[in-house]
Image: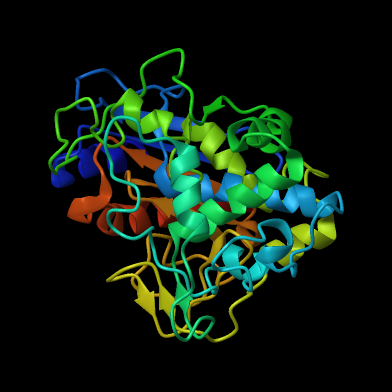
Length: 350
């Protein structure tokens, strides 16, 4: 893998890149090349802001509560958050991005400035109503993940950060941080632009951004522990989710609906599970072109992806020190995925 990583670093102007992979039931192996944008060498225990990979952790929290019988996937949101403007949406539709909600709260509802906190963001999510034609397409939504976090808070009586640790992070044994400053400095990412570039508010790279504890994008963790989130949906460790619910979570919930995330990741058929995205026949895609249609995972705009292909008995992830805005994951990710699959199949054959 190392030559592939080094080639990607040269061709895509990446400061550094990490790939981690694990065959079913085995510990992950991690390969690192390069550094972060500050020049600090990347290592297997480097902490990365994993952006929307966080949604897998949020989904697992909801599924764990469902396994306990504390909520039902077909519950209306209003059963748990009566004041929600999207009270008629089901938890299933929130998990599969079919509730008709926008990507983010309306502009101006939660100004990004000092003093912003998760409770104020949560209140803004609760006030968001579905748009016309709700349920007709797969409409990727951070608001939906925010509402799921509010449901978890209401069911557990705890702040989401505490509930997530008890339900997901601690049971999986992860070094992962949401809403708290890690004990060592996370990898700094290149290409973060906009009005807050280089300030104390810089997205991904600042303590302020990490303090927001966004349940759709704020998790900071190591590559292997980010991979553990998608491996939980693949049945590792056994019993973390009941087998019935686990299989349902990686089954298509969206029928043949069109939709997706944002251009160019919009598809005529957009299969999605209860948290994880499903591969199907999507193109373009960040996953391995040679992978199986029922493989699944999630990407993050910070420049990362975690993916599991149970038919090939392998899961992998990549984590770059450059955000995804330039499109580099679309050029590098498929090469990484196919290389991992080739190595996994070669070992199985040997």
